[in-house]
Image 1 (cartoon, rainbow, N blue to C red):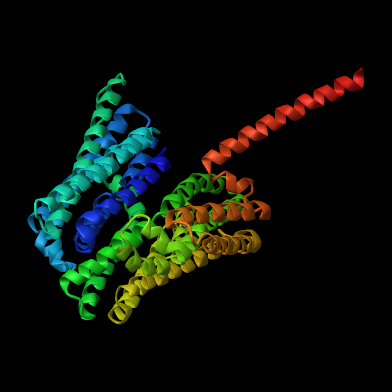
Image 2: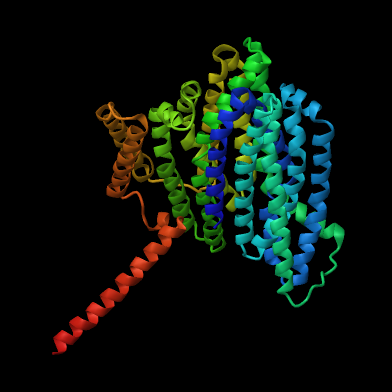
Length: 526
């Protein structure tokens, strides 16, 4: 359910930015994404890790009163900082806009202030329901946010442009969709919480010691948030370095925003799309790995880690091939030809990073589930430092093209260090053939099929050509993976839908074999 909601939100985000780009153009997208980076930065510091951490505490609580007590304590501990940061963003937007080197983003940062308060409170209710093993409220609230973000944001931006507002004001109006979506998502969670309490017999909340409960709550949430905090800090530093180095390369404020808006509004949304497929793998890995670690079965843990890594490689390689060979045609399906032509080289440069970013996500979950939560933080810090250095020197020489190169170096360093940590702790032993050789050969066949189809369909309309190429590539790649035997039983366990299908097939096969055995025995007796 959560995977479906996350995928829906990701698709809505991509769909949202396609017409939004047509409305506010490159410059407006620069202001929009600058404010969003500031919002994400504060969101990570105030809320990241809260749903997971609170769900652990609520799931351990034995009584309804204790569950409610943890929820109320979290509302106080995280609602106050959320309100404080909300006021900071609304009272001093110019300070934050100047800090990232983009003064035009002041209005957009102001609009995002209330959204931060709403998302803090949403995180408490989501963790509360997840701790009670009820994933529906979280999924529905995420979908509500996505719908308002896309619908209201595009409508507000369109009306702003038609009324004569500049790109900075239009970007601010576009961000109102996120704020309003967060408000209605919070309203839904609050109403659902009230209706949930009516089903319980006792409405009293047990009085827990404030210092003990708050300390325990923060001690659980903080380690989970640490990796996200590092990513958020690196994103803000990355934005600041990109803008200042573009100025050093001779860009004006308007042209720098246009370049950054093209990069962040066109190339990055498609680059982050594979994360919607890697995140469920990481989520499915954690409970399985914790279970085998609890049973002290190192062999099972190795098989589970290898299966997760192999599945990550299998899922991410087609995106690398597609972005590397069809970036221009894919972007041209959704954006105007000029913008797509500018962003296509950036997406091509980002293509090799897809595999490493996906591996970093899954390997970090593997390390956290095995009790080594600090290791992925160290690798992310080293990767972020390498990215800042690369961007600082390259952007002044090759302009915005230095940003995807920095992303590649960052992902390569983080992935390499995570792999070294996994081998050091004895958590990973991979089959080179099934995990690397066979998927790479399948990806090579996939790339050759894309090239062949592109040549054969050169006279057809571009959308039809791209569709045929993607379908043929998917068939060839899936056939190569199936023939090579890369998917085994351990890998299937990480995909809930395939696991259910596999269990059903095995059950039917068992029943059929048992029935046939009885029939054969009856024939022998006759």
